[in-house]
Structure formats: C-alpha cells, structure tokens
Length: 402
Ligand SMILES: Cc1cc2nc3c(=O)[nH]c(=O)nc-3n(C[C@H](O)[C@H](O)[C@H](O)COP(=O)(O)OP(=O)(O)OC[C@H]3O[C@@H](n4cnc5c(N)ncnc54)[C@H](O)[C@@H]3O)c2cc1C
Image (cartoon, rainbow, N blue to C red; front, side, top):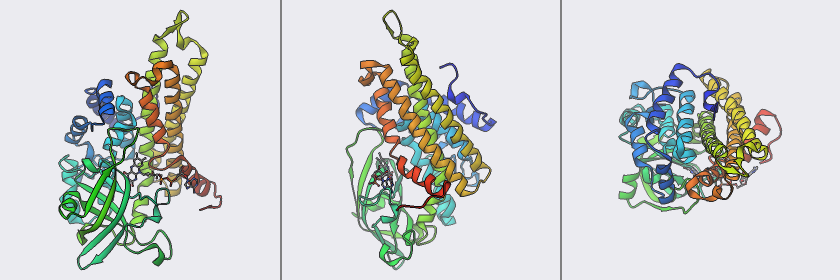
C-alpha cells in the first residue's frame, strides 16, 4: 500500500511516539504467530506480557498512580496499531479490557482502592481484564440485568448469572455490574444498579463462582465465559462509586471507549486491505496481475475510501474528547465512528477474501480470519443497530421506540 490510511491525518508528537513504540513491539510477532494462536486458541501471552511490562496497561492511568496519563487520542493510535500489526481485532481485544477496566476505578473508586490497585495495573503486575455486564436476558437492554447484590452488614452478597464475559481466564479481578435494588422497586430502569470490584481468586476460594467457556468462532484466542455467582461475599470497600449509580458510571467514559473500539476496527480493515493489495499485485491469472482488473481493483479502492472516511470521524471524535466536547456531541462521533469503522472493516475483509479466490478460505492466507473478526466487530461491544438507535434518537432527535 503506497499511502497507508495510518499515514493520513496529523498526529501529535506523543501520538507518533506511541505508534513507533507499539510498532516496535508488534514487529516481534509475525503472521505465523497470530495464525497459530487463532488455530490453537491459545492466548497470546508473550505479546500481552510484553505490552504489560512496558507499562501500556497504564496508558489511561494518571501519572500519580504510576500510569502514563494519556488520553483517548493516544489509546486510539495504540489500538489501531495493534490491530493492524497482524493480530487484527482479536489482538486488540486481548488487551482492551486490561486498559479500560481500570477507568471506573480511576474515576470512582475510594482513594485506598486506587492506591492499592492502580500502580500494580500500570506496572503490569495485576490485571483487571474482565468486565461483567451482559446476562442471558440482558444484552442490548443492559438495564434488564437481574444479578443481585444484597447488602448484609459490611458486605454485599451477590447471586446471578453473566454471559459472554471475556478474558476471565486472564484476569485477577472483574468489574461486575449488579442490581442493588430490583428493577421493580426503582422509578427509572437506570437506577438501582451498582459496580463492584471482584477478586476472582477470593470468589473461587469461597466456592461462590463457577465459570464455563463459550465455544465460539472469531477471536479464538480471546476466551469468553458464562459466570454463575452464588452467595459471593464482597467487602463494602469493593463497591466502586455510589450504590445505585452504577449504570451512569458505566455510561461515563463509554463514548471514549467506543472511539477506541472504532480504531481497532480500522486497524483490522487496514490489515485486510494491505494483505489483499499485496496479493492482487502478485497473483497472475490470464498472463497478468489480478489487481489490474478493475473488478478486483475497485472493491479494494472502495474499501480504502471507506476506511479513510471512518478514520477521519474516529480521530476527529478523539480530538473532540481531548477538547472536552459535550457528551451528546461526543456520543454522535463515537457511535458514528463505531458504526462506520466496523462496516469499513467488514467491506475490506470481504473484498480481501474475494481477491484471494479459493485461497480466501485457506487459513494460511489469513483473510478468512480477518473476515470472521470483522463480522464480530459488527456485534460488539454494541451492535450496529444500537449505534444507529443512538444516532436516531440523540443526534437526529427522533422518538425512542424502546
Ligand atoms: C465475543 C464476545 C465478547 C463479549 N464480551 C463481553 C464482555 O467482556 N462483557 C460483557 O458484559 N459483554 C460482552 N459481550 C456481550 C455483548 O456486549 C452483547 O452480545 C451485545 O451487547 C449484544 O447483546 P445480545 O447478544 O444479547 O443481543 P440482543 O440484545 O439479544 O440483540 C439481538 C439482535 O436484536 C437487535 N436489537 C435488539 N434491540 C433492538 C432495538 N431496540 N433496535 C434495533 N435492534 C435491536 C440487536 O442489534 C441484535 O442484532 C460479548 C459478546 C461477544 C459476542
């Protein structure tokens, strides 16, 4: 690719430094590494450890707690690079939670909990890779969660079920969202929800947590689980923020995280497009490179244009967040960026499979893996429909249907 989408747009000096440092690490892990991990489902431990040891899990943690104190702009660059390096969306997802789950602690936890945990996370010694919100009957409709946390003396007692919770096997702690007041007893469905920090080792020791891995395709080396809590006792000090305010705390910072997810989608799309372009320039059929045929060239050119457009919205949104744009404006950027970037990645990956002909489904050529990941990116962390719902309601001012 002559002009990589990552080379477009103006980066600050810090963003350039982030990009160089992450590229240096990623260069140590070739396509074979990612292919093998996708085939075996083995977590890319060496890669994640190298990032952790270099302090990258502390990118959003303030300097006073040992972190780098950077912002959405730098994190977007970091995650776009990780996805574009060869590991795709899955490689970004392997580390995403470890970066974002410390944010509620930074914003809402008691000082003692911050001092206990944040320096260890920033140093790569402790991981908070898991975030537990989704339940079998509460996915898009997250306020429908039923997992209960009842207060008993100076503890909370948690029972319930969570599903699709990623990286529980790579985590020391999980940030858990549960109802402290049942939905039937609150005026607004967004009330009565609270956020807790759960020490997983303690939960297993209490015999109060069982987990079961979900058999899935896409992002094979990032594992997702079903969790069953029964009378798990959590000390009151592990309540994050205010009781009953957890849903609003989840919403806070969501736009910034969504912009970074968009950057991960972009990295995947850029990777797929780069792979396809190289193949189109090399593969000869009917005496010439297939890339000379416009039926092959145009879908790739179209994918390039879509990636460039989605990238522009994503980084404009990241700049807006650095400039403290109002939440609703940021929400428009974040949801548009996630929607456009996931679709751009999907179109790029689809074109990459088609460009490879029959080899498009051979694992050895990687593009079928990129395609499955791009499909997943249209579903998580929110579906494309829910991103459009936000835009319809909040950006266009149309009535809400649900
Ligand atoms: C690989 C993977 C990893 C995940 N990791 C985590 C994790 O670590 N932690 C966590 O908490 N969750 C996680 N999730 C859960 C994820 O956030 C949910 O799957 C997602 O929010 C969608 O919820 P759902 O699957 O219940 O779909 P549903 O809510 O059942 O939706 C089904 C379909 O209906 C559509 N739909 C529903 N309501 C509307 C509406 N009002 N308007 C238009 N369309 C609508 C949806 O867009 C979707 O297409 C993960 C999921 C996957 C697949």
